[in-house]
Amino acid sequence: PSEAIRAMGDKAAARQRTQAAGVPIVPGYHGQDDDARLKEAATQIGYPLLVKAAAGGGGKGMRVVQREDELVEALAGARREARRAFGDPRLILERYIANARHVEFQVLGDQHGKLLHLFERECSMQRRHQKIIEEAPSPLLDAALRQEMGAAAVEAARAVGYFSAGTVEFIVDPQTRRF
Image 1 (tube, rainbow, N blue to C red):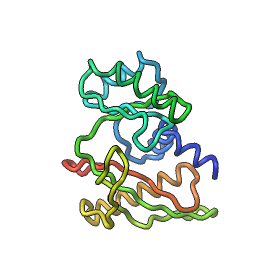
Image 2 (cartoon, rainbow, N blue to C red):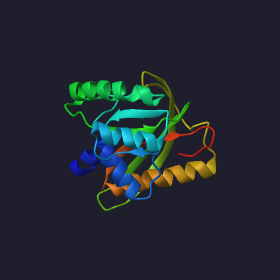
Image 3 (cartoon, helix red, strand yellow):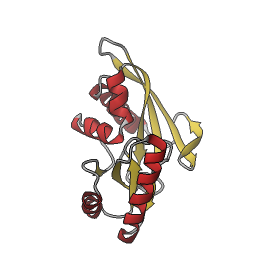
C-alpha cells in the first residue's frame, strides 16, 4: 500500500518505524536535521559516520565522514545533492561500519496479514553504492543468523503494513556479525 511505500521510502520514517517494532537498526540519528542538531548527534554517534539523504537511495546524498572537521562540508554537500536528486534536503546520520556486508531478504505478504521471507541474497559487491553482484545464499550467514535476520525482515514489513513482494536490506558488521 502507498502508506508502506511512503514509510519505507523515507529513511528517517523507516528507521523510526522499524526501531519501534524492535527491528535492529544501525545506530544513528533521524530527528530534526538542522546543522546544530546533526553536529550534536554526530558527537554522540562517534566517527566515522555516514551522512545520508532521508529521501535518498542509490548512494545519492551520501557522505562518509571520518573526523569532526569534515562534518560541515559533508552536510552541505549531501544536502545539495539530496535536494537536486530527490527534491528533499533532509538528512540522517548513521554509524559508518567499515567493510560492512549488505544482505537483503525478500519478503512476501498478502492482504490478510500473512508475511514470510524467501531467504537472502548478499549484495556486498558494489561500486559507488550500486550492486554489481548478488549472491545467494549469503556466504556470511549461518543457520542461526539467517533465521534471526529473516524474522527481523518480516517484522520490518509488518511494522509498515506491507503486502506484496519486497526487499528488506540489512547492514552486517563482518567482525561482530551484528546486523
